[in-house]
Amino acid sequence: PDFEAGLKDFKERLANYER
Image 1 (cartoon, rainbow, N blue to C red):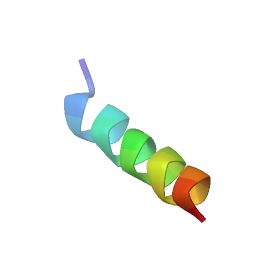
Image 2: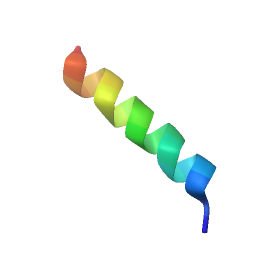
Image 3: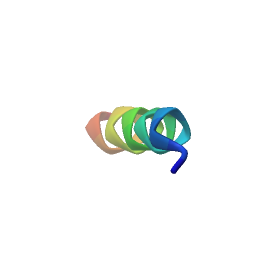
């Protein structure tokens, strides 16, 4: 699967959530 893509999405969500 796209682990890197998922990780990127996860990091983006986390950054947006920590805003």
